Image (cartoon, rainbow, N blue to C red):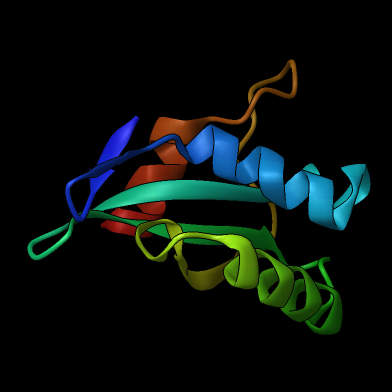
Length: 102
């Protein structure tokens, strides 16, 4: 959980909501990363693999942003060839946050 504009937000819950919208195949190719922000505390950045189509992603984001509260809106998307994963396939969130947040 991270604070965004004073509200607690769970990035994993946001990912799950995106998975509900985009389906399981898309869910494995995206991540939501909290990045420190001076004004907001944190901002949520969507990271997607290059394999995700732009039209598919735009549709998913459109639906998500219509449903999401203002503080849970996503920045990005940031594209990368592949999300960093462990040998067992688990998302390496710290490594991803370092790549995205600098």
